[in-house]
Length: 228
Length: 228
Image 1 (cartoon, chains in turn yellow, green):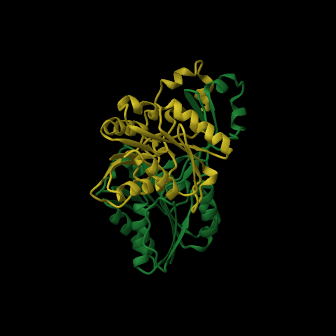
Image 2 (cartoon, helix red, strand yellow):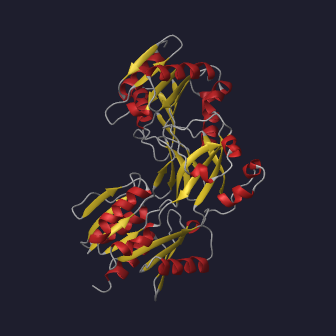
Image 3 (cartoon, one colour):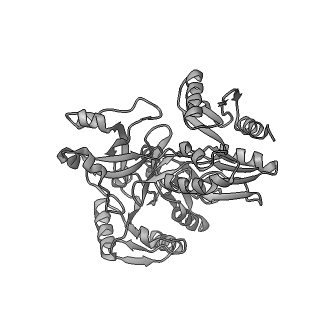
């Protein structure tokens, strides 16, 4: 099978020297990639420069991206010729549009004007005590995947922080329907430590529980290959 | 001599999953550290998790920091017992205070109220098309160094983007006076590529020009050790 995996986190530039990063080590994506590679499957891994990656090997194709726009291009190109997408990347929900200070904010009569602005300096400097950064929602890529390839098997991830098991599972079920996914891996940042990675794998008619990255990778592998 | 070096870039958290990072590979700090280590000097390197670092070795002390507050603690602790500080880290000028949306921004009568707020959610979620992030200036650490140790030799860095040689040198001279530094390395992001790193080393009575990270490290080494 041809498996497409995303891992790591995207970074949206504020200017030439600063960016907003969604933190993700890439460890889980690496583990999942290795699980498929070890069984002889072809893997395309779309990931960030900083993320952990499997060793280079003939069956592995690496595709390095930085921001959501890069990721969108990479997905559009790769989704149509893969059988499965495992979308583990931490994708920025918002991207910077314009940075200003309180003085300009106080003077403007219509806030929407600021959203049409952009900063001309490559490195935004300011003497002001406060800065104000306007951000705009990024396109929700996971919801577009099935338009690019209706038959692809889609596995999504939901990361929440400090919520109940019930909330995790409910949010996963919602995402399953909303994004036409085949499986959602729901996890809580507070349940992820060096040696543990609790997660619920939620499908239309199943619910698995995992305690480690290895568990998650093996459960995904089993689910994806069960009809082969 | 006991040399204190900072390298890499700081990250200021927006919430549990996102942060604003000042990009820096740590390559230059690594090169400078190695230059001193190879000559038998003791080096304390304060750096970020992601930055490139020299191989572990007896003369090298590593101190990993994330944000400006961490860096301030590490500097306060280490500056008093070192002879030289080479402050190459890309330090965040501003840190996030409060994230909201346009609706709240439109309704608030006094913007300063928002600066007293903070987000209670660990992962800030929003359905809004736009987010607005308020940031506050971080303390300028380099200007405090000589208060913590008046005799320390202080080497600062100025990174600008797409400016003239004259501007680079002028800004370096200003920083030299303002921060009571002994040497400022001024560089332009547009003049830094994989194989090249142009910089001006500006002192009270000298001006050197460097073309590579190796040049910069050697010129700093020469300047720091010239009176020994």
